Length: 87
Image (cartoon, rainbow, N blue to C red; front, side, top):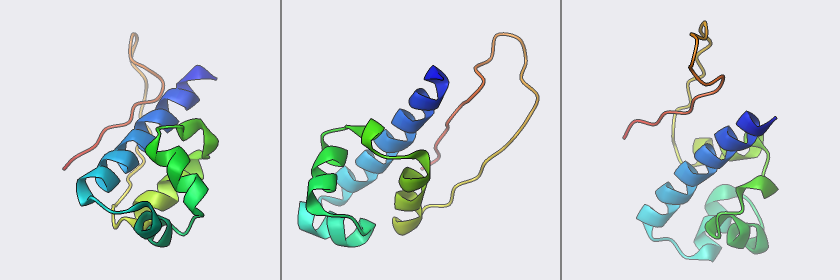
């Protein structure tokens, strides 16, 4: 389902931005996220489809971010999935 890919890309981009703002080297990112350096390269090159949504959510946890999932009624014209971020 295309909306799943959009949500994953949005979450991945948020992880990417956090890491970019921290100005960490790839070896440091690998340690923080608990992944191998080649995976860091994929993440920093914005190849988010290589990661599951669960893995991306785990990265947010490792980056000390809270994730809240809200389920609500969809109104006509609204997307089925929506990812929003607060600073």
